[in-house]
Every structure is written in structure tokens, then in C-alpha cells.
Length: 306
Ligand code: 13P
Image (cartoon, rainbow, N blue to C red; front, side, top):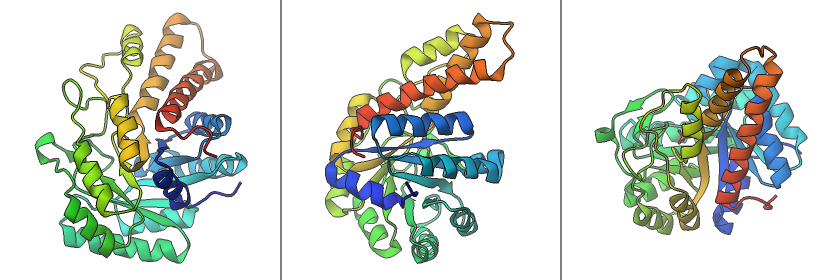
């Protein structure tokens, strides 16, 4: 089916109190894993490309995602993750993305609103919907490194003002999560009261970045096969399923796919040192990512919603 605007998928998710995965891709195998799993699970899905993914895979990667995305029979949106500028969002619109994020969360509120408004005007003119962010997540984003002490949680009154003035369609909120494989010591604190308060003030779908679970068994396998990942921690599954019932509709997942991919590639290469057929190395990695995506979709409650 044709690709759909992000809001078409996310408005249903917010109203139905389930979450939809926005899975990041960089290559053909990851794209196949995301879309094949969505089709098999009858789940709507968002395929996210960051600016880093675009400079790695170029127009060819976008073409792969668009062609594969329009061949599956569930609703798919192709999304620009963390667009850093108006120009970057415009390029994505021209490439045929059906959802864009403008991330000016590190600017002051007025600048964030003004820049978001520009992107909203352009995107809405061609029927595409927009994600914006207010507050600041810790960890590493594509174009900005935010130290833990600089991370600022989203204030409910600011969120309400921001959505009324910016015209954005869905809002990324800082509620305790952070990007990457190390989300803090022990079980990271997720501010559920804050999600509930924000959701009470705005009906827009809310977005949780930095939501990977960083499964222990996958990290252990990766390390057993020669990896050196230390202090890896993710967001607890109970926090994700609770957040979904509180108003989070879009859940970004990148790190879990990278971990699954790398763990399996390491295992294959160490078990079969003579192997040099890329299909026999990347094929199992694709299967590993599919298993992770399936379990994420089950956790979000999106299985069977398409
Ligand atoms: P993770 O690093 O937790 O997978 O988060 C990815 C993300 O939020 C991309 O925008």
C-alpha cells in the first residue's frame, strides 16, 4: 500500500492506547527485517532514517525503504529522525518521506517554536506530518551530545504552549530516557507522572526517544563473542508498556537492532572463521533483528492492529 503520513498511524495508536515502533534503518537487511516483521505481525510501523543514515546510504537507501515500504500490506510511514534544520526536512519531503522530525530542542523555546512552524508550514502544504521535541534527552543524538546534567525533562505547561503555537503533530518528550546502550546505572527512572500530566494537556501522540531495552542476554552474547560492551542498560519493559497506556504512541528503537545485528555477526564469524559469504553473515543478523522487532511490537501492543 502507499506510504502514509505519520499522524495517520499515530493518532490511531494514541486513541487505542498502544504504541507503534519507529525502528531506525541504515541498510537493506535492517529495512527488510523491519518491514517483513511488520507484515507478518500485521502491525503498523514507522521506518526511521537519521541524517547519519542518509549520508551513509544516500538516495539509494531511501529508494530501498520507499519501494519495500510500499510493497507490504500494513500502514508504513517513512520518517526523518532528528532533522537538524529546515533544509534537511525539506530535502526529506522532496525525497518522499511521509513524516519528518525537526529537532530544535537544544535552542530556546521561541527559536524552537519558530523553526518548527516553518517546517510544519512546508510539510502540511504537501500533506506530511511533523514531530518536534521539547526538553532535552541525555545521551548521544545524531548531531548533538547531551551530558546527563544538561538533560532537561519536558515541562507539561511548556509542552501545551509549544504544541498550540508550533502546530506540530506529535511531540517527543524528555521523561528520563536517553539514547544509546548505556541509559544510566541500574533501572533508569522514567517519570510516569510527567507523561500523564503532559498527556492530560495535549491530545497529540507523544513520542519516546531512547526507548531501547538493551536486552541483557543479547549484550552477554555480544560480549561472549568478543565484544567489549560495558555497563549496558536499557529501559525496563514494564516502563514501556505503562508509558504506552499513558499516552506514548511512538517508540523509537535503534540501539536494540544494532546490538542484535552485531551480536549475531560476531557469533557467526567466531563460530565459522572460514565463512566469507556476506549472505551467510548478514542473513542470520537479519533474522536476529526480526526476533527483536517482533518482541518490541508485542510489548507495544501493535501486533494485529493493521
Ligand atoms: P535508542 O538508542 O534507545 O534505541 O533510541 C533511539 C532513538 O530514540 C532514535 O531517535
